[in-house]
Length: 395
View 1 (spheres, rainbow, N blue to C red):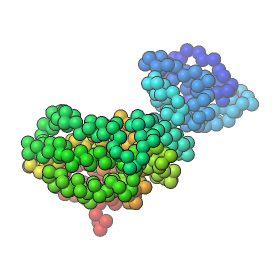
View 2 (cartoon, rainbow, N blue to C red; view 1 turned 90 degrees about the vertical axis):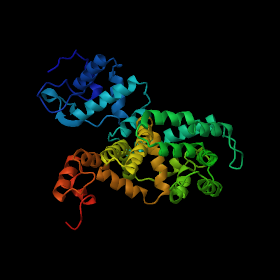
View 3 (tube, helix red, strand yellow; view 1 turned 30 degrees about the vertical axis):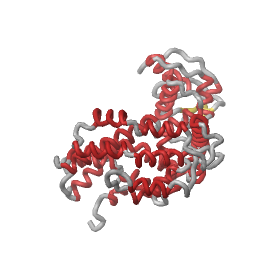
View 4 (cartoon, rainbow, N blue to C red; view 1 turned 180 degrees about the vertical axis):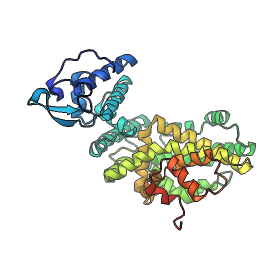
């Protein structure tokens, strides 16, 4: 049992006395705080004060302790015990504070997007504040506070589009991630990225994101799609994609798609979308594992290259800005009526883990037996009540 320096007891922490090893389950507040301070000191993080600890409980960042009865020696004050989960949550807060994330709203958002169980009503308010602040900042940076939908492309939006289609960035991806990209596939991608039609499409989508207009941009997008140098199977999804981008970064005063959809989502659906964001990098990693295990034919090689591109873009966004990826899915839930159900099923199916397990067992290019498939699902962490998504229902 590690030793801890004495910590002055504070009645406001909710304990009658420091806990004794083995006396009861869980930690007293004093022991919990002492352990966190020791860990913070060891790893070079700022310590948590008694006052901050009290605020973390008040602001519902820490899970509630369990009341264990009266204090030692029959005292009048209640005796509280904190769980191991509360201790780990406190350490996460220590790390967030060490990274400069000190606002309670931001701490709750980071914890929620990391998988923590935070009060959903509180998180909804926190996320709304984040998306409103972010949208207004983007509107200022783009210089479109006073622009109208009929104005020409704002110069800063045009510069952003130019950066997205910068050939240097694309060539950097090919150099870093495209070692298995067939030459003809790379040439075709270069032609698409460099084409005037693609540039006009990106310009239009970005303008729609900050100055939404449901009717103005779609005809032009359809025309430009037909002008791309190679056939691209996007026509069926174009209307949906354009509507998903419309208002994504717009000022809430004229209609921000994320904020408006967030206000309509149920608490349960918000948690599902959070879990979908958490599963996104795992899904892309599973796709890569499956594609790499396919026989080495030209079609498989091209799919592997595309999968790597999606993995770099999608996983990078999920790691660097999971709140923005969540916002994209929140807006999508309002545009695509079937999306919420698909996201819910995807979370239950755990496709990333299942695909990796299939690749590990060499079962990518063959049909696993029913018994083997059950073993794969169990190893991937799919709960039995969701196995029917993968198994033959007639079995």
